[in-house]
Length: 246
Image (cartoon, rainbow, N blue to C red; front, side, top):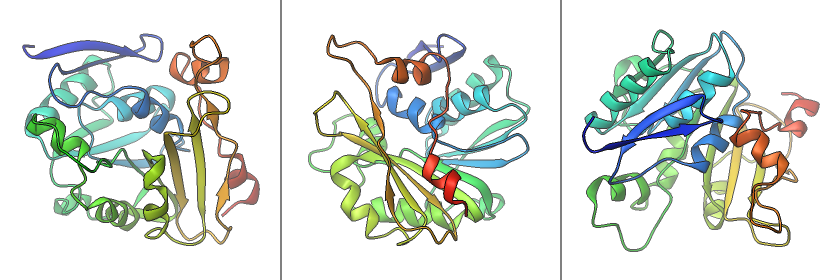
């Protein structure tokens, strides 16, 4: 496939072709997939699926899980569906070309779990149109959050990964209850650059901050906890949400 490279995730168990130019999925997608508390038989929806990395990592971790992905770029949709077939999950993972903020009729229904890695960068846009579309929110981050919540079933979860300095404006849009924040710390003692935010729709628990995950050790390698997620496909456990219930 011209213009793409083959990348491997979860210790090589997930193979993803993605464009050489433009936005390329990496650690953020894997961490997002690890945070979704899905079980076999659940329905899930990804908004802005790209080449399908997050959805495919989730499908590899949770068997018998149905995943639908919306992606506005038709070329990426084709690549994502080819990736699903290459990983042997195309019977339960389907990507469709469509606008996450104005979805096709078949997606205007509740899903058990909704997730996204929304555009969350401001400032000067990349000269590459595809990369700019994937990264620059153009002041519409709140619209992405509203779209995700609208598709989340009562008692279900909406999970997103964002830049840490966009957390404040995100919380201003999200419900005041049922929100849990999971920071990703680059190293011990360093400020988080990314946070995972999970909303349990309709929950009455107050906003909570979890200890999160330290990504790198003093030597620059991944910590054993981060390696368990990135290589072994371990889940990120939002213990507070599980303990306190819905």
